[in-house]
Length: 374
Ligand SMILES: NC(=O)c1ccc[n+]([C@@H]2O[C@H](COP(=O)([O-])OP(=O)(O)OC[C@H]3O[C@@H](n4cnc5c(N)ncnc54)[C@H](OP(=O)(O)O)[C@@H]3O)[C@@H](O)[C@H]2O)c1
Image (tube, rainbow, N blue to C red; front, side, top):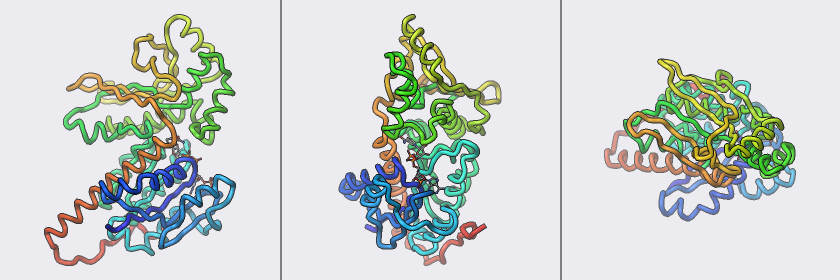
């Protein structure tokens, strides 16, 4: 059982939990899915880079980063250059066993440099799994096409609703069902804050709690101004409704201390105020919006407490389908990365099996022309 080589681009809260979860799940992943892994590269922005062809002790490096240490020396060039260098050194890319795990910070201006990281990885023969919403929110069509061309996977299940298989639910398990729209509560930080403010906590204290738990984005305005929800809405609409939205083309209103007062007033009237994300078809256009909405108490979204999330899909064939996440957090997001890795593992194993059965003549290695430095 040959291991998958992993390159971690970004080594913050999510990636650190990912490496410990991989350790915790080592046995079932190997036994049940034939997936074993070796982490050969880690790139960060300010905590240096590390490379080890035989595998890095990523759990110890994560412990070090939590104590303010670097993973290695600062490298030359960008993280995309780092991906290219590793892909060039390793046979794993040719063997379809190189996976880049992209967990850098969401850059709400244009989704970069995460989009470059994904493009470079695919061009170099690596699969990509990411929890970053940027690539699917800003460049889904181009990246999906690049993945098809490269015969590699670009998976991002953790980008929306953490460990809940929301993209896979629709894409893999509902054949011939076309979603015509959705509405949901997709940002844990603001739902926690609205629930806490209803109970009398201040805006600042509720936000500080989410930051201390590593759930709020590094830049909290991404959560409270509705950008994170807008990025998720764009990703869902682009992937599931065939839209070409970006977070900037979505009508958006976030939450403020005044929204907390509205939430208290709504509660007194038997209603709940929630930050609702919605998208749907209007003629041949897809429109989307994120903003606080007052909901009747018996609305499924109104019942979401704390960090809970939910999305209700509207479909022609099956009517409404709802997915609810009651427990959200780093483990759930890290799990989504593991689940995407298992998807890749299953496909690679199946392809290797059928290649063995067919015994094709030896072919020269695939040209990865786009992998070189641009
Ligand atoms: N936290 C959650 O619960 C959650 C849930 C779902 C999705 N996500 C998404 O997952 C991603 C990671 O979240 P997180 O909480 O782990 O963030 P985080 O703790 O802020 O970590 C981000 C990591 O990315 C690194 N980084 C930034 N720019 C980079 C670059 N150009 N090249 C290489 N590394 C770079 C940072 O390095 P330095 O530390 O050295 O700057 C850090 O290691 C984000 O996109 C987030 O939106 C997070």
